[in-house]
Amino acid sequence: MRHIITISTVLLLSMSMRAQVKSSGTAEPELYTIKQSALAHSRPVSFSVGYPKGWRVSEAGPPQVGESLIMDDEPVCSFSPRPSRSSDNLLAPVERSEIIIWRTGGATAKAEAEKFAAALRQRSNTQRDLSPIKTEAGDSGYVVVSEPNLEKGHWISSDLFFQAGAKGAIRISITTRAEDSDMRENWQRLVLKTLRFYVTAPESVPAEHISPEDIVQDSIQLVRTGTNSFLVRWTYTETGAERMLALREAHRGKKVRTVVGDFQRLCTISEFPPNYAQWKESWLKRRTDKFFGVTEDDAKLIMSGLKSK
Image 1 (cartoon, rainbow, N blue to C red):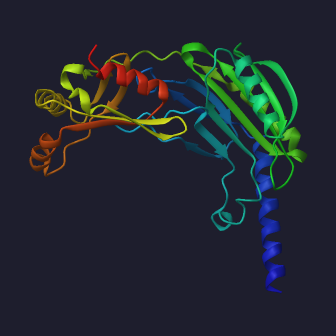
Image 2 (tube, rainbow, N blue to C red):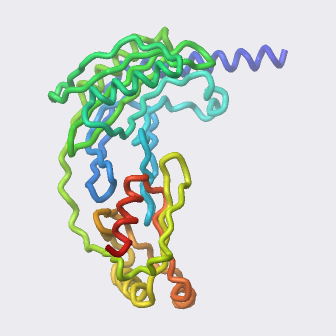
Image 3 (spheres, rainbow, N blue to C red):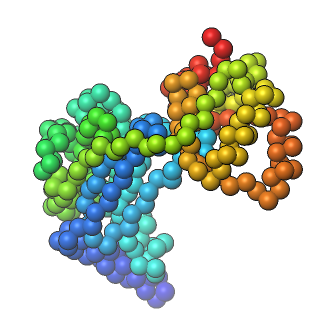
């Protein structure tokens, strides 16, 4: 009897969630907006797009001080049905309809779409379509429609590629169950109707330059930490360490532009801890610093900027 009740509960919750997903396609959409400068991210994106009303928005965490969390197809944000508190655990494997926006690269949207389609075929996914699309605002792109090779259920995905120059390059992935193809097409129409790209004005912030003269040259190290993730670490000279601390003391709690050769990153200098005097004395003995989680291209720029010519 307990098993019958449990199964019935899951089925009812699944039906409730699917009803919520389908009804969201007819309600007035909500609007998501993100505007990044070239200093905030090495691949900034600036756009707004509509999503189904009442859905949950999840954003990728921003880079921390000294970090660049950049890798191929990094997620910008995602939209998914908001489950009730009683169904948080039960429905996770049942309803996977979602919209995910990714940060991409490539010279053109067509090139990215073709590369994506080729990768799908290598993974035994079924590609159903690759064709040009255009937003209501006039931005051109390409869409790849495919059937993901998933263990549970039959799913259909539409992946929309846009390359808008300085406004950013993105992939919008829309996934629903195969029987909900009308809903997927409605969401695709919603994206094409509401997507708008923006040009973001550059931020005016003080610059923090790190020069080869500030660095103990034989201390520079490059360490791979992931597929396209690297750590660059070094030790300051005594003079360089004093200069960097003075800059950070002057700008604590504020945004600064850290510049190393041709590499630059916007970050916020954190407030100092209560025991700052003790920490400062200890740090001046080791004088180390690093960039963690940078891409291979950024790591090469940092290494070049740190080393004496």
